[in-house]
Length: 382
Image (cartoon, rainbow, N blue to C red; front, side, top):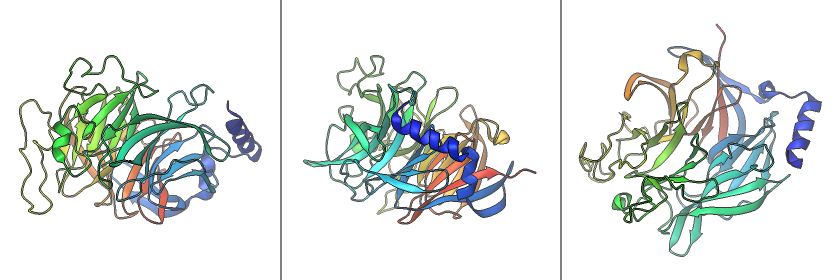
C-alpha cells in the first residue's frame, strides 16, 4: 500500500471513522422523499465545488472530485476538503476543463495505483480530449503520463464527451463527442470525434478491437456515430451502456456494441437549434437505434446501474442524471425494452452532472454549478 494511503488509513482507524461516518458531514435536505419502491433521504455532503464533473471513491473512504476549472478536490469523511496540486493546465472555455475520473480496477495493490482522468488539452489548432493517469501523492498528483490524445485538435468549448468505464477484461472505454461544430466527423472512421474508444490500461490498442483490420477506421474506435456521450457505465453482465446528448431533444440511452454505428448525424431523434426542424432520419440500415429516447430536453450526464442490497427494488436498474432538466431518472429494462420509468428528482439539487453508487450502496450526485455540491440519496427504513 502506498505511504499516503497507509497514513490516511491509520488516521481513520485511530479516529474511529468508518464509511458510516459520512453522517457527521451530511446535512439532511429532504426526509421521506417518496418513490415507487423506496422512501428516500436527500443529504448534502459537501459544498463549495466549482462546476464539479466526476467523483471516485478511494479505498480509505475519502472521495476525489474533479472540478472543471482544473482542480482536484479530496473530501474526507468529515466533509473536510483539500485540493491537490499538479493538475495539468486545462482549457476551460465553454464545456472544457478537468473532466472524468476513474481508478484502475486493481487500485490499492501498489503496482496499479493509478488515477485516470480526462481533460480538454489546449494546443495548436484548439483543444483535444485527452486521457492521462497519475499517482496520488500526499498533496499532489505525481508521475503524470499522457496515454491518449485525440488525433485532431479543433475549436475549443464543445462536446468533449470524456466519460470513462472499465470493461471486465481490464480494457478502458472512453467517450469523445463530435466537438460540436462539424457533426459529420462522427461518421468519419479516420477521426476520433463522435466515438467511444476502447484502450488498454496504458493507452494502447487491444488487438481484438472491432476495427483493427479496417484500414478506413482508426484502431482505437469501439463505436462511432456518437454525438456527445456524457453517461457511461458497464452493467453487471459486462455490457456497456451510454447516455448521449441529442441536439434539441433526442437524448438517448444506448447499449454499446463494438463495431456498431449509432447514426449521428445521419440518424437523430432531435431537432436543429435554430430552425427546430428534425435532423436526419429516425432510423437507417446499418445504424443501431437507441434503446430509449428521453422525453424533452433531458441533457444526460452521469449513468450508473444499481447493484447490491441497499436499494433492493432497484437492483439492475439504471439511474441517469440530467443537466438542463435537473432530473434524476430511474429506468428498469427487460432486454431492450424500458418497463419502468420514474423521475426521482426534478429541481431539488439543480443540474446533475454525475451519478455514482458508493461502496456503502448509496447514491452520490454532483451538482454542476459555480457553487456546486455533493449530495447523497439513502433509503429510509420503513
